[in-house]
Image 1: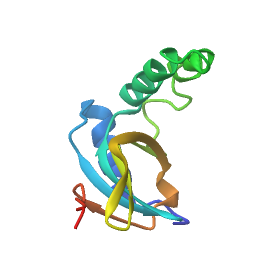
Image 2 (image 1 turned 45 degrees about the vertical axis):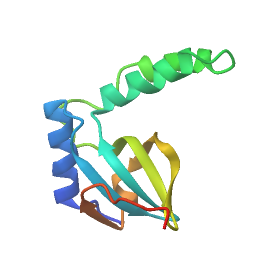
Image 3 (image 1 turned 90 degrees about the horizontal axis):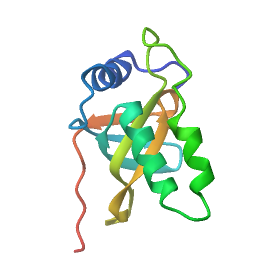
Image 4 (image 1 turned 135 degrees about the vertical axis):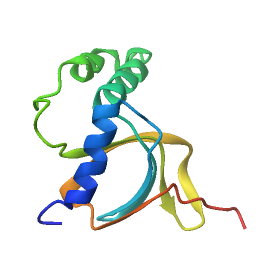
Length: 121
């Protein structure tokens, strides 16, 4: 999308303002369909930092995610922050347990409310 969808920006702003992680969303971006729940950026950053801190090799990178967000509170969100999310590939999701994804809103070409399910059959 050359110009972000204002409705999608409003959804992201609502997630950010309410500090809620209950909004399920599925988005189409170049090369992927991603489905999962949105999280506020601060919550997402904390979780990524926690995972990195637990890694012997990647621990030093955790500080990058604990620094303050570069945009101010009055600026509209520019990214969606997914947790427990999967990339849909054929009839299954990757990873099965869900991952952490940061997606630029202006890269989303289509979206729907809800977490698309997948099946083994």
